[in-house]
Image (tube, rainbow, N blue to C red; front, side, top):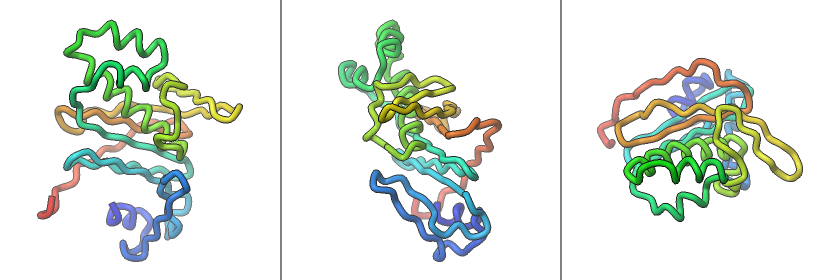
Length: 175
């Protein structure tokens, strides 16, 4: 991650300074040649995603799809999302839940709130309106193609996402 960020910032990886907000959102305090560079990262198992954006906050999430108890899954959903989930055959629910979860977590990370954001307070649609402290935050959301079979991923930002560029980086000898 540091090597990719440093390349975009035009500085050496060891010169890169990353600070975190009180809720844990990382930010560059040494943007180098790329002022306004924003980023977010997520990892699940041996898979990691890094989202970069200039001048707009961004959030990304990736999760391995695994079994989930229905009562736990429903806690992160609005009423319409619960109804859609309940209409699915049980074998399809885990994949649906993780697609929804990664979308909601990407939104919350873009806002800098992480898991402090109530996931049942907003529907994970392409255009997201999140109530917060009497205000409404508006974000754009895209579910990403599964980076690997059995995974779900999403990206969110405070500005339209447009065309995304996705790369697969080679593994290092250590994983």
